[in-house]
Image (cartoon, rainbow, N blue to C red; front, side):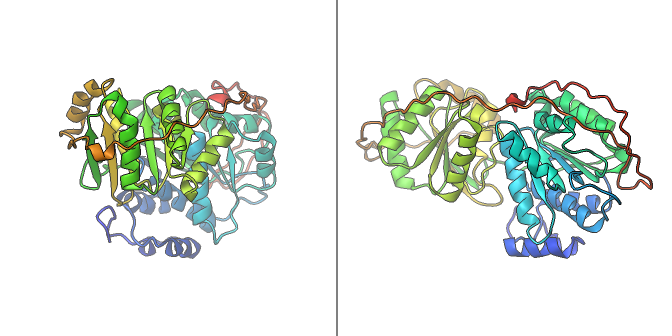
Length: 443
């Protein structure tokens, strides 16, 4: 057992045998602290509002609870195949995809069907998948409302609801859409409710009290990201030394899976072209990259087709990538909290990682605020001449016309008056459709 795990074994929690079989196959024996606290409560039909950072195991906590509920609780009599029993809302497409992949892995020995709904992807394909049969529907708020108003699915058979990263829903302006969806669901007492957030601020707690059934609040501190598991190192290169130093460090460390951050899209493109010209397998992720390409880049990083993903902070929001061994800060971020978010992408789930930062001429002044925020000085290293390698010319940028994303706006759904503890079911069609407040393209 490693230090990031609790002493609680999954096998002792009362989970369904098919879930235990999947956990055994994955090599998961002990629960993380958030899993050890949340799962027993949820298995006892207690709503949970959890404060936990990314990397604490919260996704598997709510997925195991959801899947166990569906495997042990009989479906509502007369349920249609397009009536999801579990409904999971996340703020970004990438997080939806990650939850979907994790859910499929945990449910691999069951017959449960997972579906996704998010913007920037094939509207009809997602629609048809839901209509063909959906037990667990995972999506972003805008596209979920689209399909609801289109009557692609309804909430008649809803047993479980999960709101992930609730604080980011507020930050991204989606909270009115979230409230809209909650108002169309069965009463909080008729479903199992889960909410997870990095912070349980007043507004998040207010949301929980309004749309949950007396939730138990649990709080798990993320392990300090600047502890022993993340080896931090800082260089002070001149501007003309940054690219040679970067290539030299990559050649020295040979990262298996790395993320590299810049402060601007232009810098990201410059670094990517340089790495490409020097035969380093890398991908470029900026805010204007189409959704299909974003998904492809993530798959290429996960599969090892590329070793380094270059991104800006905005473009990388919502990304959840396991097994990152190195984080490179080509520019020190302007926001001290972004530094912690960046380096926190490595050393997850008990692993170790390296975070290498450049305090260049243009952003070294950001360092004092960062060090004050993390509570210690970052170890420095000299720019050794042996690391300043001779680099080849950068590759040439291939410019392509922009492709507009597909948008779907008409949406529909029916109300319901049914939950997992309800005795009777009322299929009521006297519901009027409201207007969504967030454009799907913003998710």
